[in-house]
Length: 241
Ligand code: ADP
Image (cartoon, rainbow, N blue to C red; front, top):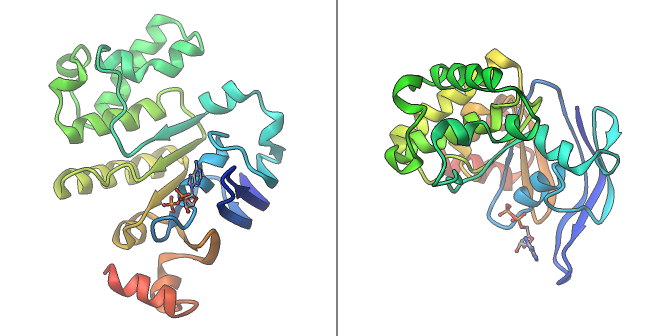
């Protein structure tokens, strides 16, 4: 579904953030990018929806190069969830969730049905929450709405950049469970950045460990636990358990 072919990213200041990356992410896969700070995870993620343009190589989605997609459609068709809660403060919860369907000109009734269905899916009663403003929700609830917004127009791919790292442990567990359920039920392809190995082991179908802009190991959680490629992997897994 998503293929990186010899992808490099060099920023204008000379930093080589990603070095000749080759990677294939399957349809319906929960794919976790993990690694120490500065290892190139976010850069890799943001190249998928062209928030960062690559310097060399190709990224393909469903075989087509991302440079051949209309950039707006590419962004609308890929859900994106950030660490910091990025809801629009002046808009209601329903309006926040409906941003992309509105851009796509869905009719009002379809939007309303979709918003209610999504709120129900994560246990937020639509009657109670639809018309609230973000500040009337807890941090965990706001982030849940952030996830729903990414799902609203039913994208095939969802990118998540440390979406739960600012949350308390309880909300974090709950959202991890929600996202796992959503992914299994709706068969979404999720690319998820974290620096937390426990989170990676819990969520990932496969995990990709990066260091200095390169891949150290890609494999299942089981492979990471039982067959680490080298001491760096062993330590990374060992420290975070
Ligand atoms: P991670 O997500 O693993 O913490 P990043 O992808 O954010 O890593 O960053 C990889 C490297 O690229 C780091 O050395 C970082 O300082 C550098 N970097 C990230 N964004 C920029 C930028 N806009 N300009 C210059 N260097 C950057």
